[in-house]
Length: 370
Image (tube, rainbow, N blue to C red; front, side, top):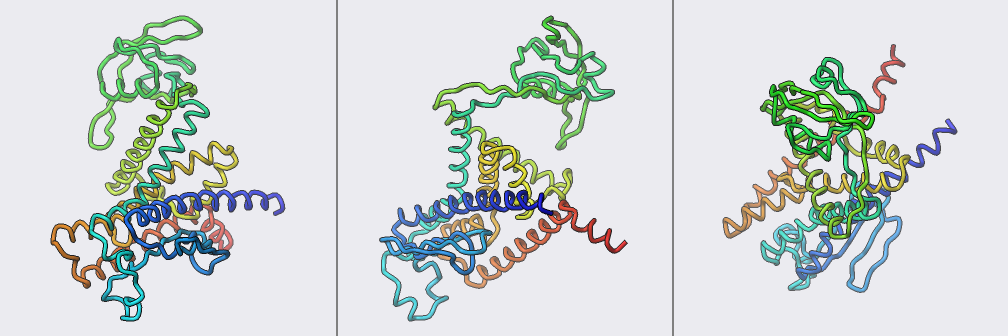
């Protein structure tokens, strides 16, 4: 039990750091955009519930750190629709500084700024890591050869370095994958370096169905990661491209879950994030920072989904308002928000169930019963 206490504390601290950074940056995006568009911000809160500490800045914004660190919010002046609040509240609003009186464009900018801040954070973090440690490059070195694979039949062995394939020089494992995937059931000449000598082999990628198309696979796992030093401009561009890669991979994964080609057990919630935060923290600060960047992309992306309650849902309503020339009917908004809350509640329950399953709670309970 005593040996588990440091691990528990490390997990809780790492989780608080990860979630705190992500929420703060997201809400800071809303805050800065609101100030830019002339909207008074009444409250900036990290966490929900009773405030552990708070202070008021010179602009009248109350900054709070609350006891339940599972999110945060920015409360803007006049954020409610005028017809939804009493006359006394409306009379207290300061003309020209309320959220609802701003144009559709200004409101959309304020709402979209939260997810945009998360994407920007990821770009900056990735760029900083590339600048500090170099850009990781997976070299075309064979790690493992799968049994009965095309690679085994061709004579490839662990630690072989792929020099060229089909006459094309290969410098990264990704480049090797692209050539192999594009040539299912086609024999390809391949040059490998083994023990300092070049060998010429022939390999025929096996056809494999993935995502509704046929691709080639040879049955090897990548082996060696090298870090290449790059200049600041390359690091910044690397941050942008890495953020795009994470975004694309996330969307592909979600599509696979929706279409049933990938299991829903991979969906996780706060408990999974907490568990992974502790595990990643064991690997060092750089790994934890990378984890924050990846989660920041996911948070920004999820918030852009067109689900009422989320930022994407608000943007969808503003788009409809811009097209119609007036806001949607109150009843439509209410039904939309109720549906959005129900969907999010369902996803939360489902992801928490997955989290508890991964943590082994149900196996432990069933073991007690048995």
